[in-house]
Length: 198
Image (cartoon, rainbow, N blue to C red; front, side):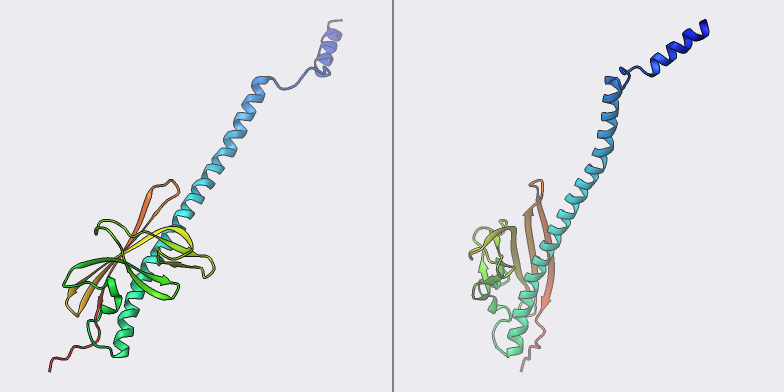
């Protein structure tokens, strides 16, 4: 008799339609699921942020190197053409005068390469450059196009008259969290055309 009572009770518990997860078990399962999902998502988010920062740094470095190469090209073109005069005077308003430091930007305009002096003191940066989507190149800030987030400023000084000049290019932009970021490239260039003193 007792044996049948336990058997009935066990069968009743196992076949009862009211069995299932309790509210606490459900909440614990949801909490574990949320933790297992948010971990990889936060890693993915930090990875994306790092890749965007790296992309911006690469663009800024190439913009800085582009300015240095334009100045070298100007120097070499003048030397190869056999033109006389100061080796940096083809830079126009960017050419340093009597050992002073000039602040300017060199870039492309609608008519080709151009040099443009920046207004303000030596401590301020030039205005932002413009990205021309049709030609896929950055232009000087006073030209038509979509304003980019990059501003490029070139500081040019002649260290040894008619022999050596120093170029410092500062490219600045705002990062993903609106923090200021900056790339600085410095290079000394030399007048490779021999100077003959008769």
